[in-house]
Each structure stands twice: as C-alpha cells, then as structure tokens.
Image 1: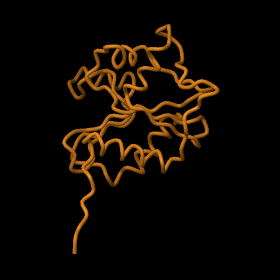
Image 2: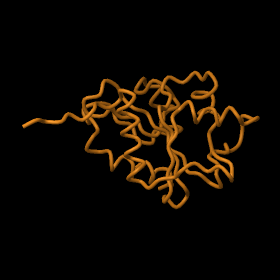
Image 3: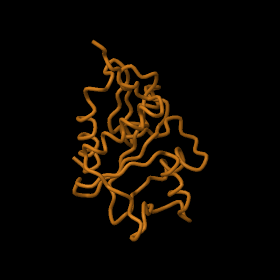
Image 4: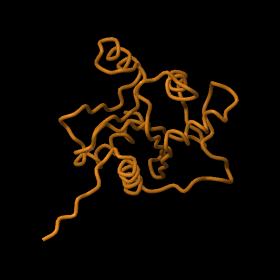
Length: 168
C-alpha cells in the first residue's frame, strides 16, 4: 500500500463514525479505476479526489485530495491540474487538500483556493509543486488535530451540521 493510501485510510478511519454510509463514499479512486467508473457513469469525472463522502446530516459531500510531501513539495498529475486548477474542467473539485510528510507524522491542511494558488505560482505545468518555502513552513499538526481541522472547516462551510446540544 502506498503512503498516500495509508494516509487516506487513517483519516477516513478517524472520521468513520461521522460519515453517512447510506450515501456515496469514494476512497482513493485513482487513475484507471476512476476513468472506467466515469466511462460507466458511476462517477461524474475521470479525475476524482481521494476522499468523497457526506457527513451524517449534511446536505452534500465533502471532497478531499491527499498528498505526501517530499522535501516541501507534492506531485500533482497533469490531469489533476487540468481538472482542478486555473479554471479547470473537473466536475468533482476537492474542497480541501491535506498533506503529510513521508513518515506520516506531520500533517497540513489547505482549502482548495489556497492550494491552487500554490499551483498557479509555479511557472510550468509539470513537476512537483513547492508547497512552502524553507523559511516559511506553515504550522504542521498531529493526525488528531488534522481531523479536527477537517471537521471544523466542513462545519464552517455547511458541509457538516453543527453539533446539537441537548438540554435536560
């Protein structure tokens, strides 16, 4: 199993109890599998984010793309750039991008607009994208905090209902 799949599995495992399993759940539907599913009309696009699911009680799904960072860079396929960045044509654009170091110890989260700005700042459409400069590393967090940040973002943006407090 690739590190990216391990990363996704750990995030999904920690969110599992909050996911509406009666609705679509996609997990690491990459490459040929996504193209085939799109060809059969099972998904709306041949380029799908790593995690697509709906929180219990939410009106629509959240889509999250996961990346492993190597020397402050992530690899982004040409199909992902075309579908999701710079006026892309993709129908399933990620809401969030999450990153992990190669040891799965440090984690980061970006909203889609912020991450695509990093992609757009790159002068070429090929090669790894520098996520942060050596002297301006964003605050990393542990896995538990990453999951809290995903939940908080989803709640703030209407993709997860706010928790109800019971009186009595």
